[in-house]
Length: 310
Ligand SMILES: Nc1ncnc2c1ncn2[C@@H]1O[C@H](COP(=O)(O)OP(=O)(O)OP(=O)(O)O)[C@@H](O)[C@H]1O
Ligand SMILES: [Mg+2]
Image 1 (cartoon, helix red, strand yellow):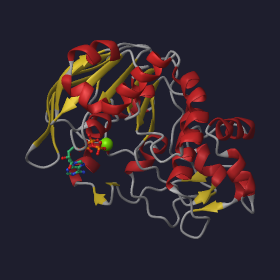
Image 2 (cartoon, rainbow, N blue to C red):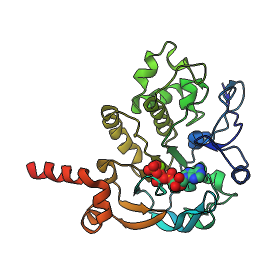
Image 3 (spheres, rainbow, N blue to C red):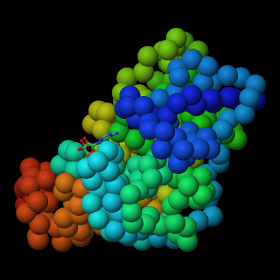
């Protein structure tokens, strides 16, 4: 059975997207990727009997991701200023920086939500543009800072990640995202309608639904923007193991605050006021960057004390 997902208008955090963005994307946005960036009309966006617009992730991709001299402004002032960095194929790059420095914006640009002012974003052989945005979005799964739930059942909300998934695959993904038990406890289980008239989900539960979508989609490029920020410590620790498995061999852009997550990345970029201030591994930056030590602050100290105590 197919499900209809109709996107009525685009938006981000309640801000209605500009006509330019709509024009840039034109074709329906891939929901699995953009779920959180779409201000979907809560009514009628999931109806039975029609086609799900989200496409399967493409899995035969290898290649580096690179930003070259990228500038971007939401309005007049540049938010991203001449950024250049490469995420080598199959590795993880973490972005760290203070609030408002531009981390999420960089992730949104990679996801093709906004046209850049100048510079180049390259994904493998392809340069991100109006022509290639669809193809590139098919390579990506993302879990954003705020995760959205669509009007529809819990099952449909996970299925968005991979429209032709089997029931077993959906349940498996929900288990990995540690949301299966919660869904099973709802009055109608996976058939419980979520959204306006349905069960109200907490931020952490919504985030776990989004994580389940990403597990199900299993695409070659992953974007995690504070993907576990709304989870309690216990759920986060439980999900970490499955996350590590999911990330194996994938090209990953990760935004996180927790040192344990950040230090696993092959490369860490410090973002300051829309620019890359420094780049290196956790070890490099711990010794050479005052900003990194400040950003990680107590976490580095705690880790050091723990090691010394052993
Ligand atoms: N849709 C938008 N329209 C206008 N300005 C925006 C929009 N989204 C973000 N900004 C601005 O762009 C700058 C970078 O924001 P961004 O969300 O990328 O920061 P961040 O590093 O992800 O912060 P945080 O750690 O708080 O998530 C901020 O000054 C923010 O106010
Ligand atoms: Mg952010």
